[in-house]
Length: 249
Image 1: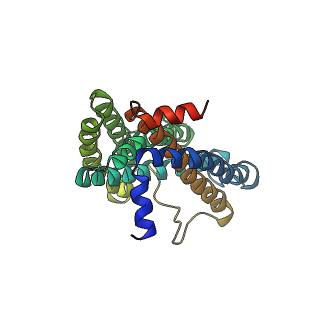
Image 2 (image 1 turned 90 degrees about the vertical axis):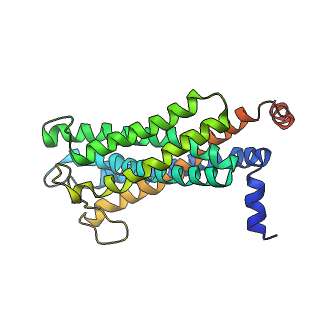
């Protein structure tokens, strides 16, 4: 068997995944935080104030990476959910459900930082703008997945039911992405392009990219940690869990 294929098969084993997540989750947290430090320093102390928004624009270094992550995490959750439903892979069920609270947190941060920025810029904390409204619906989708998963006692049945909702919600992602193009939106249009030409000055873009990379790496640590906890809860009656707990004492 191909070594990579064999590794994926091993990763699906609950004891193997527990050891894998225990080893790499802390690295994800630490490396993610270290990658974000240059971004935060640059955003607060090196980047000049915006000629129109002044220092208020600095909140985008939290707002934009969180917005990107809110969409990326939902997309990943839907992929895991689809794999879990089609191939009945338990690890993918666990990973899909572990994505939901993390993605919900990123979405909430996006909405809160947007409101904080919107008050001085727009004169209001909230507006039923297409981008804001669809982002709020995304938060409700995350909460719906979490609610269904928590409402059913059988973990596998709960995960499959929640996975259906996760897959249905994918239709929201392109709507959020292109809402500022399709409708007359109060929210500003796209000014940042990672792979194309960006309207943002390069000196302002570099810290944002550090923050974006850092949040992605931090997410890997958070995902592994949450998935590991759920995996242990599901396997709590197994001998290997007791042995692992005894070995940590």
